Picture 1 (cartoon, one colour):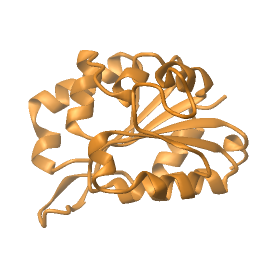
Picture 2: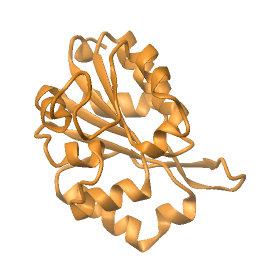
Picture 3: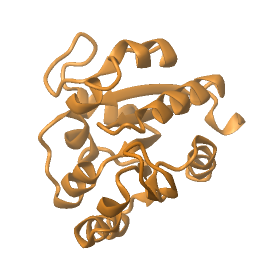
Length: 181
């Protein structure tokens, strides 16, 4: 996957049990010699510690909107470095915030600042994914220029079956590969 070599790819991680696949995604990107930088929402940090992503990416992990040790204005500096943003998993809440232009944390603020391609990999309960509001928000973000790798059907963490599982990492990587010049 030479496409990713030395490319700065931001990985947005939101609070879904599918976060374990985000770990796989970051590891795969680093293995492909990309330079992944992870931005986590507060909910995501309750499921996986930022140190896990730091170890997998080899880079600092960003969780705060206001100045951190690495960037004075992370939503601007990280956006300026990005060649591609992948949000995986993208929750229903995140899709709603992005569709409405709500910027109340680092990831949502950064999304209003980036000018590079954006790839979203939604993950949620099947009934949530099927809800008209979520479908409307998915259409809005696509209309605004984001690309979606739709969730797939299968066994969900809650024990039910349906379309809501985050797409396989390989599928996300293929989509991302096609978005980089």
